[in-house]
Length: 278
Image 1 (cartoon, rainbow, N blue to C red):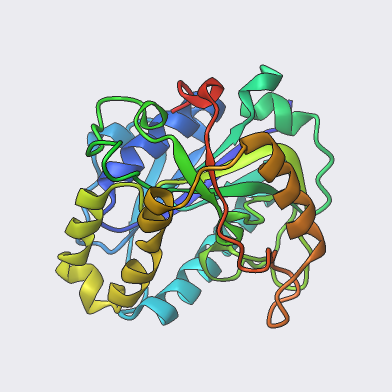
Image 2: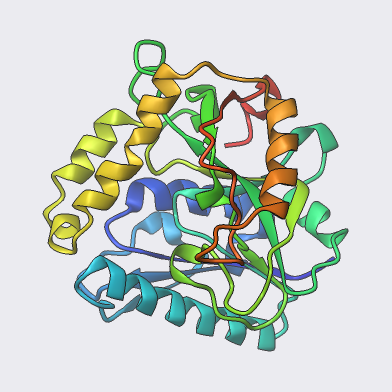
């Protein structure tokens, strides 16, 4: 079985990090999780016990420069882990979860063990929102996928998150410099950063994020909730199959190593087979 590590960097994100540790710890073992806190003013929660967790000097004060520095740092850490004996490194934000389609009946390590990965592997991105009027505020004591059932198929979250050799991720893990990407048939990246209106409003009021220039970013991404609420949900199997083909072929002219999908706004309803994953 391949040795797999997962890495992330967080700041003021215990809500998501707790779920991240719970999910990836169950999949690949807590001893293979590497968590870096952005800022020595952060407090490491006891839920991180058993992981490799460390505090680091805060990287940058503005979102764009900080993000570049963050991914440079994480790329270096991933290279170090690969050199130390890991076969694969998963690099994701704390609100992102790579899952195998439950219809296969495989764990994430079992699935990845069967994959030939030259440089990277991408999961199809699903950006979850809250369907206002149908779905209530998120209850963190219950599985997310029992409370959220709709997502936009998003090119922003089809990321080359799984790597098998040293390389340089671009900002947000959205691309690997000087390399193409390859979308797996049965992997999904579930993004929950904008899946709850109440939590989103709290982020709008987070002075630490606002001071770093996150306001416009948060406002822009909050459109996911509007899309999920207003657009008709389409067939999951049909449109995820379409998206994989479309995103594999078409690229934005400004970044040929990122996926494109003609700016289509496709919302799908997640099948019940996913409801107990996390």
